[in-house]
Length: 406
Image (cartoon, rainbow, N blue to C red):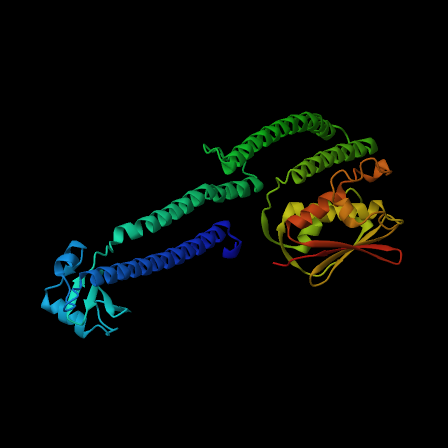
């Protein structure tokens, strides 16, 4: 998943922008507040100095200044530094000079100084403590960080839920998604957990039913085949053997249909030659092998031998059943397996035949099988990440499997 598709990434960006914006607002507000305080102190200093000056010699009454909170600076180093460097901009202590009707001010070491007549320096009653100024910004930033952490912690369970949903999609029903949280994600996890358990019960019930029904159906077939082995060869014996063999093939086909519908087939892929797969398909074909004309080239395929062989067998079987001459051709080239016959065109698009029970209720000859051949075939080919397509050329139906070679 790309980072820009992540919900956490989007929330993080929003909170980062919010922090930057709030920081900028707080910084601007602090600067504005400091400017106003300095201006107010300047006005106050001007008023006090005017009242402290005597009418006779215009000297400043230090007692009035002291009572007003202005402290005379006697430290020669600080005094000289402020007077001499009153216009200096570059120094480690950052002197900031201001002029207000002949009264000069400077901020030095977080203190505000009033310079009068370039000879008297007073420390103004100016409070510039950091803690009151940073208290509100600190609380606001901590609150945003706390809110961010709380939201991320609420969203994090989505990652584990996504992993469990993926495991469930892959056929793992033994997952636990219960959550003690009361938010929307916790409710979603609990509802999904209930659904998983309900589906697991349905699957277990279905599997139990299938095992029982398969056992009950296979038992008489097995007994019938054993009985046939004890009888003498005759025309009726051959017919009887074909009947039992056909019934066994139908049961296996039913089992495959059920597993394909439930997406429970696990592939066991290995490298096999197309000739070996075709031989297997012809062995389990419901018709005589003389009904099939083979023109294949050597090809190696990475497939599940039995399943892919069943897919080829179903195409051959359908090709014979629905042909005008009870004959089907199979050939191959570099990357295709081509099965064709002479007969009527398909009534519906090929994709419709890949739906389970699509032909249920449709008119079809009972002698032509169950109607699940194309369903099983198309799904097996999809499981192998291959593609099957249908074309009609003149009076022939052509099925092409675009095979992936090993």
